[in-house]
Amino acid sequence: MPAPVDPRPTACLALADGSLFYGSGFGAIGQTVAELCFNTSMTGYQEIMTDPSYAGQIVTFTFPHIGNTGTNPEDDETGDPVAAGMVVKWMPTDPSSWRTVQPLSEWLAARGRIAIGGVDTRRLTRAIRQSGAPHVALSHDPDGNFDIEALIAAARGFAGLEGVDLALDVTCAQSYRWNEMRWAWPEGFTPQNAPLHKVVAIDYGAKRNILRCLASAGCEVTVLPAQATFDEIMAHNPDGVFLSNGPGDPAATGKYAVPMIKDVLNKTDLPVFGICLGHQMLALALGGRTIKMSHGHHGANHPVKDRDTGKVEITSMNHGFAVDAQSLPAGVIETHVSLFDGSNCGIRVDGRPVWSVQHHPEASPGPQDSYYLFERFAEAMAAKKTELATA
Image 1 (cartoon, rainbow, N blue to C red):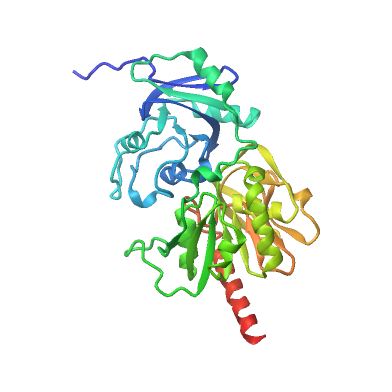
Image 2 (cartoon, helix red, strand yellow):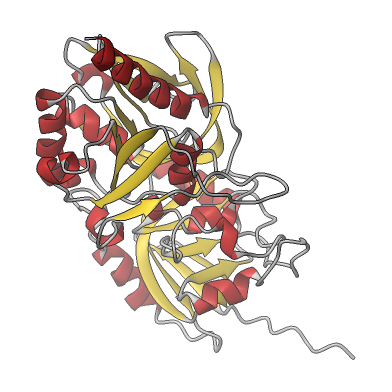
């Protein structure tokens, strides 16, 4: 006879407003507190959990089939999961993929990340959309013993992400070189052995696939920590500067990042390209400001309009802060907007090879509509070299 099903919940998600969601725990045992967001991607749960931009957040997945392809080392965007936890509708089934190395539950447990299944994620998503991203506490106890008052108090005690610099928690400890290009059948990941341009990438929480896209565009990439100075950047004699994605409040990270970016803009004419937090850092350095969004944008199906061309791109997004387009000074042009809510998704400096986007053109997970931005960066560096050679 099959073993009887234990009806007791083994995990509990407590919101700061006192709402409770019970379910079955998997992954690590314990408790964590964070901001709760939802992600609408149908694929890429491993990339999402290892995206450094999710530091300080628990991710609710709106797509129910999470875990069915297992996990493997090639899909990590950084060394370990950065998201604090995971909420799903259905418990993960046994993985069914030729690429599987480890089931999702084992992968989470080995990396200390808590997850809860069996939750009404549609109800939870509606609550986030209506009231904004809540502060929550997530507990996993195989015996089903929960101190509800303590969980709610922990959720209410979470400081939130406004005013918090999380880039320092996820940036690299020291500089390193990156030459691995995008995955391609049948070779997989291959090295960039004939780079054309030298790029310094500032790591505010860089995803590996962004670095791969730079390498695939012909770049020799040197990655520097978030607090790198202008002099440290210029010591590498770069052809261009890249500002990476990352977590937390851009205004807090900007306290040390903005002065460096201003130096790059004022003392050089190098091409500059930013993504996500790097986009927000560039906007701050140019005189704009950023704002906290209600529930942010998280998913691989966000339509963004390129205002220069009229083209609509289906993009991947992951951000809880946005650039206030109304704050952009003269000479800074809004290039991309979200067709969901009209929020800013891109800027460029008039007459200079300096631009950035809020969405993720490296598209892991997601479509490939925005890969051209990496090629545009490479073309700008090539044009600058030609200009210098003929001057």
